[in-house]
Structures are given as structure tokens and as C-alpha cells.
Length: 124
Ligand code: FES
Image 1 (cartoon, protein in one colour):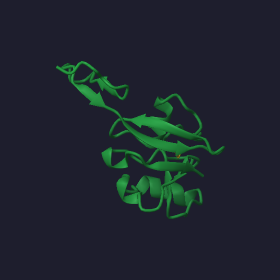
Image 2 (spheres, rainbow, N blue to C red):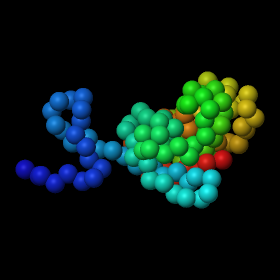
Image 3 (tube, rainbow, N blue to C red):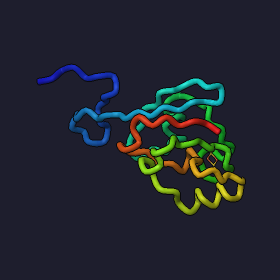
């Protein structure tokens, strides 16, 4: 039996079966240009993943509520298909706050999954 569990494997709390759960990782460049490795679970928004990692460098006065439009990140060229689709509430918030760049998304509207692993997002 394999007894070594890497640092990005953690026990699943939900299953009760002690099956190692794999955490995935993306990267976020903050406004100062620092690159942060961010672990996430599938279904986390990018905003949640950054906060769960103990960081607060993504602005967001609505605290992830898709209302303030402050948490804008840019998705690298060719990676838009590897993040969740733009939903109506996110689109409306971006339009209301004047965010029109085709690579822009709201970190609190962008849901991560295994296809998102390794993407390097940049803060606006
Ligand atoms: S945190 Fe306010 S819109 Fe994302």
C-alpha cells in the first residue's frame, strides 16, 4: 500500500472513506506582478480559491457576490475554453461596470475545474 501522500493530496472529508483528494492548482499574478500558486477544488470560483489560500489581493467590495465588478482578471489567450462559460449575471455586472475586454472575467464568476489547472490569470 502506498503510504506517501504528496502535499497536494488531502483526505476527503465528505466521503469518510479516507480516499486521497487531489487539489488542483492555478496561478494568479497580482497587481505588483507577483505570481501566486493557488490550490483549488473543482467548483471553486477563482475568488474563493484565492481567499481559501489565505490571500486577499483580489479586490472585491461585494465579497464575491458578482455585484461590484472589482475582481476583474484576464484569462490568457487560448485558455478561455478551459474556464466556465460567462453566465448572465457575470456578463451583466461586467457591462454595468464598463469591463469590455474579451479576455476579462470576474474572479467570482469564473468557476474552476480540472480543465483550468495550470492557467495563469492576471489581475486587471
Ligand atoms: S468580488 Fe465583487 S464582482 Fe467579484
